[in-house]
Image 1 (spheres, helix red, strand yellow):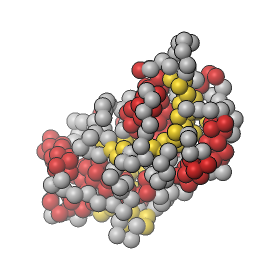
Image 2: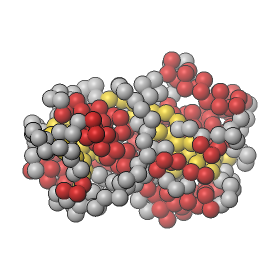
Image 3: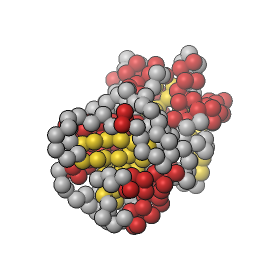
Length: 357
């Protein structure tokens, strides 16, 4: 898989399509008029296309596919509630879209239902595997990169407490939290330290959740509680709701910092000065490659699908940006070695939420 650096989620302020309706042609941005178009149609989850997170990443992948092949016609529809998922997917079936992309683990059941009703339709989904032959799953072992981020956070914490919280307790969320907690534990074991993880108990699979992927005030509320308990680095795994944490961290004047997720926070949010790094899920390239293959006539197989790892650069941690001069050289080297050790299998990262390979 060709993996490039994750590109900024800019230029995504597009007209939102009403639920169940075809998006305006303004969203299509199709190049050229000659020949038959290949229609690639995306259904967002409730976070919306400009969530600075996984929906934005998936749309970026479609945009990149279109840049490479101007016969690809792209559009999206935004889901305002979970009840819209199957309606929006079916709407694209009725529009005879060639390739229908569902974004997010919450859409698994709706995608499965739509795919089973339309066995000749090519679907794909990010962050889930419904186990249906005509759905191509793109999943990411973010526990691996989360492990690196946990080790880094433990090494950078001055209070000896770091925190994490999720949007909802679902596998694409808790996998980050598992890896983060294990990375902190590995740091403690290696350095004979006792850095605490607030907001997530991996053994019990219980922790703090905003119960939203879009309400920034709910994200801020959860991270405020973690900071009040002493956390000086917080990792929100909550899509757009996590922006409540980044903006508050930026306003705190350095009281605490953030580990962002999905797409490099320094490229997708205005809060770079507060972001230590990002646990990157390389959704853009996975979506781009799947779309180009489908447009080229390839039938995408549900098995094995795609699983992003540190070894294939499907997951990674982003550059340190504003924190680059603040992260000690020896800590940077240790984090890099962890990547090599995980990729080589010397360190094994486990999570109940890991996708099957």
